[in-house]
Amino acid sequence: MAAPADRVDAVRAFNRFYTRRIGALGERLLDSPFSLAEMRVLYELAHRRAPTATDLCGDLGLDAGYLSRILQRFRRRGYLQREASRADARRRHLRLTPRGRRAFAPYEARARREVRAMLTRLPASRQTHVLGAMRTIERALGGRRTPGAVHLRPHGPGDMGWVVYRHGALYAQEWRYSDEFEALVARIVADFLDRFDPTGERCWIAEQGGDIVGSVFVVRKSKTIAKLRLLLVEPHARGLGVGRRLIDACVQFAREAGYRKMTLWTQSHLHAARRLYEHAGFHCVARAKHRSFGKNLVAETWELAL
Image 1 (cartoon, rainbow, N blue to C red):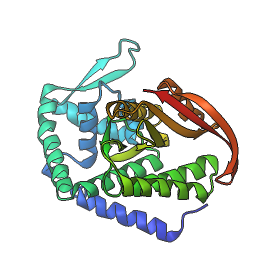
Image 2: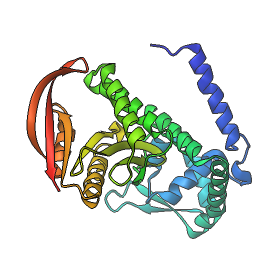
Image 3: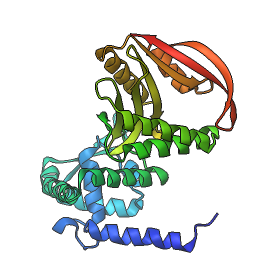
């Protein structure tokens, strides 16, 4: 289905704004002797381990002849050296010389300062929003990035809205749950905020590169029993150990808070989550058929002795 004209115009407007914002419209980038394409090639050479010209062409989408002319200019300036591959003598690996690194370093430092200054003008919540939007665009358009470190933090303003939204959207998309499930999640998080007791309850938000990628809750069921609730990991962050870290944080907190047992409620078809619970030491103690969220399901209660 072709994109509507107004959406095409919106993307073009954003492109015009952002290229102007980062100073990409000038003949030379960052008042340097390099064009935007030359600076990007320098960046790749400085941050990658001996790529070939073929690698750069494919990853940067550059015409081979255009890239060859850029590399020739770098060689004439003493910025670039080539080494034959030990595995295939026909391939030439590219490396920046010390002179090339010295030429690039001031502009790399300036670019980082300018981006830091741009972000610093925003409050932390807006920084997170901007970085998350960038990640969304990158993923949607097929971008590839080496996963950054994931860190866990306590919940803050706005996080509960994200928890409700992502649970509703993901479970509808992946399991065709009705909006009855989103309503349940909304009630759970509302109760959590209304009755929050930090001595025995906690929410963790998992972040990666400013993007929220997961969440989990510990709530008080009784004086001796804690309940793990609302474990969620975004699809693009699965397989990185995020779920295990969230569950481990819950178990450790429950032990330190003095609980004797931890329990959770899940569904039999949520195989990935069930494997995580089993790995953490939980075991299923009860199963029951039920009709919820527009589906016929089998609910499971799992427990862990602390």
